Image (cartoon, rainbow, N blue to C red; front, side, top):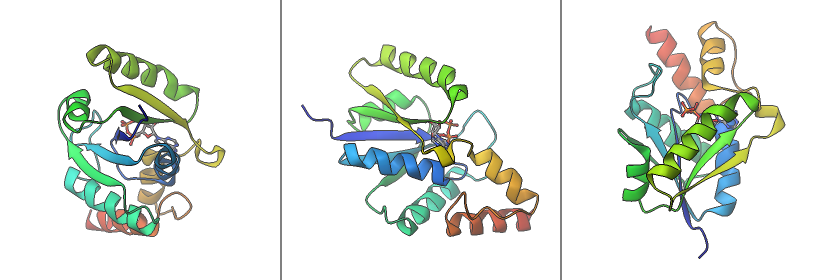
Length: 164
Ligand code: ADP
């Protein structure tokens, strides 16, 4: 049975070119890709869940990826994956530092539902250092982030930091 649909969960606070690189790679394999933004991540987010959904949708249109769905969720990821009838969970790997956490999460999710596979995509080398927290820090300190995020995301960051 060919794999048709996948969910790509994360904080996306905000979405970066690193996430978008993973989305482009995943779209080559999956007909249906759903970005699932976790409403209450472990770390306190800069943007609310509804802001992150809107920013992500806009960025995807800007990047020519309008067919990727965006939603937000609370609770257990595997339950959301089951509800949406996806076959796979997509995650991105940057460097060794991502591995331990991703490995633990993938095995836990497999225990919770062995029918849903976690699939990892390797980032492009130029994004291997890129994280949402780094982008927020640079922008907060007044630096430009146009090589890290689409224009609409940089504008959302500027509005957020101006609003205080
Ligand atoms: P989380 O808080 O769940 O890690 P993130 O939004 O930080 O949420 O990341 C979601 C997923 O995207 C994770 O699998 C993460 O490793 C991956 N990711 C984040 N930034 C990059 C990047 N620059 N290149 C590749 N994958 C990335």
